[in-house]
Image 1 (cartoon, chains in turn yellow, purple):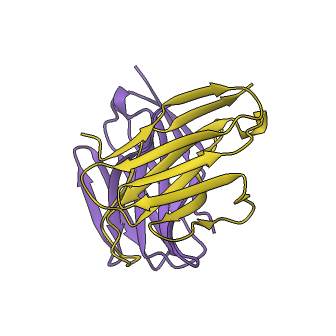
Image 2: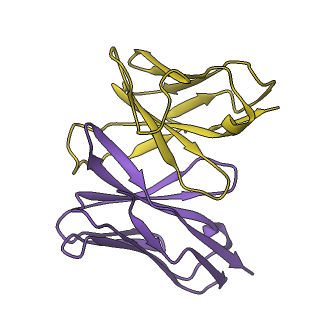
Length: 120
Length: 111
């Protein structure tokens, strides 16, 4: 069964609306979760690393004031797209896994089912 | 630094074999392989670690050559269900530990 749950699956809203996406780890605690954005026929581009109890780390070029990340518990991270515009329409996916601080970890990242965001 | 995958796309007939390559200009510590079907989230296939590791299950296997900084995914006797986009991901530390994905290889299996 799924180990990472993402909600909602899809959102259609008007330009200027803020949208919140939730990512939950179901049977493990995740001090770190990752948020990706994927445009059609393109790769998964890391947006930010969500850190439990501290500020998120954003990738270069990602506006932290536009994409607010909150990781208030060991099982929940949220991504809020503030004042969304049509260019923010995309497939947003979160991931979490049991990385133990080693780049040679054999623990995989598990992905949520993704959220398809359409801004009209 | 994003790993580079080749080829970008492959079209096969059911039962044929395919090889997907993933290479990096930087040292690789581990390589993660995922398959993504259209409109769905990526599904984990396998991880390879340093040491010239090879892994496999069913008819999908992979190898990792850290000297050449590359990994290859092998699909033998392909099935229709193998269709999708395959991504390799490399674990890197850039201020924090993260997974960076290649651009993907689109695999189409025809009957």
